[in-house]
Image 1 (cartoon, one colour):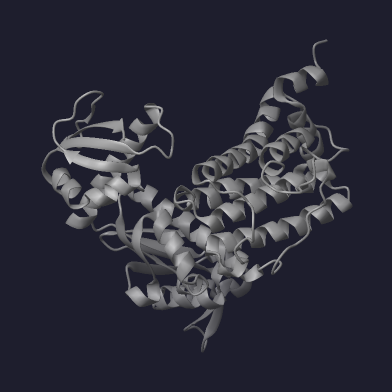
Image 2 (image 1 turned 30 degrees about the horizontal axis):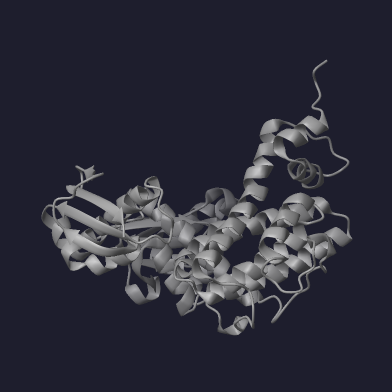
Length: 438
């Protein structure tokens, strides 16, 4: 009838691991599932290819830096916060995947591994790229250790790709390594175990980054344009620490991360009663309670509700209302982009000074040069010589920050003058440049 897909042709097209992962992690064994090419391709893209790309990234920068996992690794406590966080969530993953597989729950094990691989690639690796460019030993050790653990944890469910990773990355580099991933011991929690406080703090940081991106998007300001500061809730700020504050600032391309409490008011608040919720408790007195809410100091009411989840209003000698009984609205004052989701608010300072405008222009130049490096077929470690000509504000910015741009694009020289050869021109920026391998 043509209503089935043969398993062997599916494996030939997508790989045995993709089909195996789909069958083990794509749903409960007793539940019916629709099998299709697009579904299995999604498994390849989200899990197997993401894992493979992380391995390729590690191999590239280990080779570029001449690094190998020999000798003693840096103590975890002495590594930067991103490394310590990855070790903490890696230990958590070992605990959770072990428990899932001991309970024959391959669906949960697959979901845990899929989420971890996504966080590894799209948060840790992306946030740590500069450290890998510089050959940072702690970053190289941390990612190598993590890929080793993930390969072992994934091996029962994806035996072929993990064996290839083991043969390419572990056996040649680690003296005395088992000759196969399937002969390696099962991972156990290492070091300090699961640092729950750090995991929670990083979750707060990532949530604030998400809100900050939303504020940029709402204001239609590109991430490449540096901004002066972002304000975050005081309770969230208190959980961060200096290293995570710096990560947020770098990720959102802002000069400073501050709490609302330290920066004054940037939002006008209004408060009104949620009649549906109030009516369940106050009945015929609902309009009076709503009037008391509207008459209250909205900013103070919002702060108390955020801190405690409830607040007192002037009705019947003082009545406590809960967060779901009050509707708080924020309106940003001029020059700010404010986003509020699930009770958390961030405010992005949109005022652009001449210095910030110039910094944004430089970021655009760096983007264009990096794109040209890639299209020219240069390796990530190749040095270049760059010749440029520009007008007005951009020319002045390039003259003042030539060393910064050179460092970002790996240029040994940055020369002002009419470029020749394969010239790239951007009319919007008023820029012309050419690059050659140094």
